[in-house]
Structures are given as C-alpha cells and as structure tokens.
Length: 207
Image 1 (cartoon, rainbow, N blue to C red):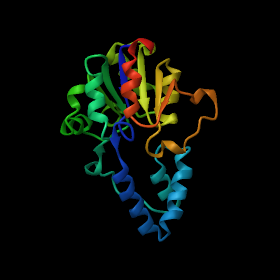
Image 2 (tube, one colour; image 1 turned 90 degrees about the vertical axis):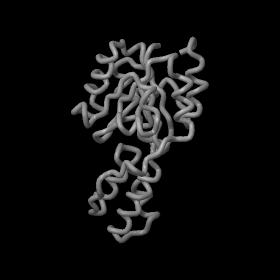
Image 3 (tube, one colour; image 1 turned 180 degrees about the vertical axis):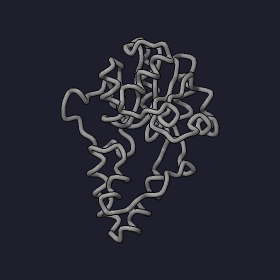
C-alpha cells in the first residue's frame, strides 16, 4: 500500500460544535422540541450525508451557511498524522467549502498531506467516482494500492470499494446511525475512533 486518503468532517475534524449550532438554529426556527428534531436527524443520518440540513428542510427551515470557525481537530488527529507521515503518502478526498488547504494549514496539519482534493475546488463531490479518480490520477496511484478512510458508508466506503481501494469506516459523528445491510457497504476495517488507526496502519506489512 502506498497512499492513505482521508475524509475530513467527522473523520479527522470534529464537527460536533457545528452540528449543535445548526440543530439549535433549526429547533428555534421550527418551534419544535430539541428531542423531536434530533430523532429526525438520526433517522436521516441513516441515508443522508447531510442529515441536519435534510431534517431542517422537513420542518421548513433553511439553515445558514456552514460555520467553519466552530470546527476543531479530534484529539488524536495530529498524533495520527505524525505517526503515518513518511511511512505512507497521505491525501484528502473530502466534500468541503473553499479554502480547505488554508484550514488544514491553520490547524498545523497541512504539512502532512501530499495531496488535497476538495469538492469546492474540484468541481465534483463525493460519492461521485470522478473525485476519487481525480485524486488517484494526481497521486499516480493504482486504487488497489490505496486506502480510503471515512465516516460515511455512502460517501466514502461504497465508492472507494467500487474502484478497488481498501477502506476503513470510522464510526464517528452521525455515522453511528448507518448500518451495513449488504456486502457492497462492508469496509475492510471498522474502527470506532481515529485513535485505533495508529495501531491499524502500524501493522503495515499486514495491510
């Protein structure tokens, strides 16, 4: 294996504060109980990569733009990247707004990535196979020599598997509400936090 590609949101980046802000906005504008709204979000998370937006739309609420300033790295992100850097080529394949490289640099982790492919700049978003192929082409990497690490079965695991990439499903954020209901969704590995990836990719010879 040569390359490890990561998703960002709910994979390396903790979006929980953004989620909370958006849920509170939707609840206040819909005039409903918080628990009712969260139940709808959880149901939508099983099938939608944007469950808060989809739930808000159900209640007739248009959410404000995503607030990147509320994002933060998971505690284990920096140490994970430090442990992998130099052993593998590292890349990003993510659905992100403009300025992804700048945000990575502001968190102090931009230096770890050899390639950053974000939807806003790429003009195509996951789960479209084009954004994965774009990354693989730029990396000059055969998909069988690459891993995709992400939190969504639909956006990350299934399309990467179609191309022959190996996959790791990180069950963080709203991913905990998704289920593997057929073999096309089954990743090579499942972890419950990125902390487990240090051990997983430390066993390089076995992957």
